[in-house]
Length: 478
Ligand code: G3P
Image (cartoon, rainbow, N blue to C red):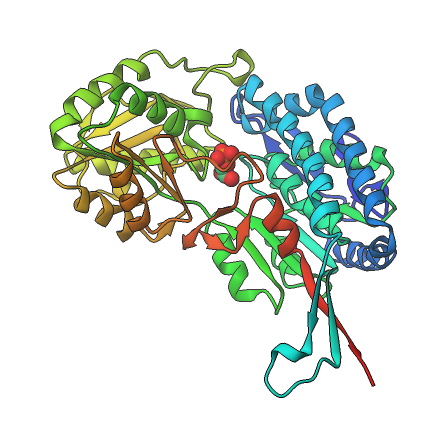
């Protein structure tokens, strides 16, 4: 077929020998929008081979040159923001404005990696032996950071471009080669992004992008002996990958159930605005979305009223029209969300709005008086549905937050900074936001999850460091 997007291997755009393709369904129209190659295991092997060869030469390329190329790729990416954003709109129904923001943010991230890389990789450590008992000053130890080799990057559908470059750029600046397996929804946006790196002139084989069915090449990629590091963002699949992967460093971010704890003295207008932004942007399809509100009973009525007033103003419709709430990514996702809503209904939650769904479009819904026995108290809907649990003490809120198997981020709203710090310390999450909704960015901040939310820490600096290994050279004096 001619209308199938090619995959990228050895610096060339190629058709798969499988003769098969994978369809990308537009979440809004529910019709096939694009097709990508269904790559074979053989093709993955080839990619791994050229990736290994390209990495050796790349590691010897001066750091400043690697940085220069990243700056070039960043500029090309930003110049091409419109066509890439267009794909995001069609593939994952991201509101048009947010789609452009994602690409611009990605360009900035790539540049920042170049900047940060030349600083942190351009310096090492020097130790002398005489600080350890029994030693003379006869050994000098030079410590530097060396690349890992081939990095496998697997981003999720919600940021196919941004969460790809957040793995690609750190890997490249650190001297690694990179194999990208984009999510099916978002694969074409990712291929366009890769083309920007291609235009920037990176050596052939250094960056590859294979598309296809997870069932055919997923495990094959993650268990491939040629892979030296895996950076994954997504759902439960990450837990399965961690069990199957070999002895390679893993960086994983696997979702969350971010709690928003609201105290009696909180600025309720600020809280309501943040619940809307945190809970409903990109229709709740963010790992860092506010996924449960834990509000003190005495201010709950007032808060719910304020949030409802704002929910009623959210626009619902197609991403092309920049609506606030757009169709969720797939039919199975819509069905899953509906399952959580129906479970809550059956168990007696208060529906602040009427539940409404057309195809994959789900109207924003606030569920009040949610109880711990409801699934939505614990599971992430990844949709525009937000549960409110009324609490009688701060301890009850902290307890609910910590009883979750997730521990990505959380937030606390209060005017008392001392209380905020203490509650933040007690919350078992990788990040706590005081008086604002959870968010990953700015992208140089550390970003990590506890428990089932992930392994390792991301953020530009941490990702660069994670994609390197320490090398020591010891000079032994006579
Ligand atoms: O869902 C992915 C996660 O990385 C969220 O990022 O920028 O929406 O907080 P952000």
